[in-house]
Length: 120
Image (cartoon, rainbow, N blue to C red; front, side):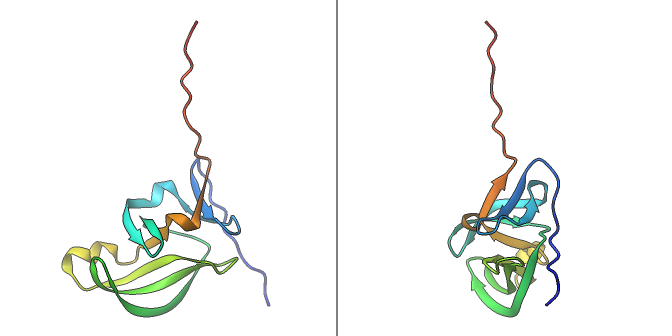
């Protein structure tokens, strides 16, 4: 078995695998935070790294019939969400080639709260 190549993302706000802490996506690649996954809220991303794709299947989702692949963490193999391969409804075509990552499966790194300092 060969070595596993893991890509490290740079930037102030990175999403990571909750199980093994491998980088997945940058906040800058979020298209929408208004999606539903199998286990609650999910985000739509235009680009993700360190994943492997499962087999292609047709799935009836809340927005209609889509052809999708489940996506897995390339390090720990946890299912993270899915990739949209094909959308059948014209209004859903924008999702093709994009990724759903479930919020429950991710950790946030570098998300610092802005503190307000008052002057004496």
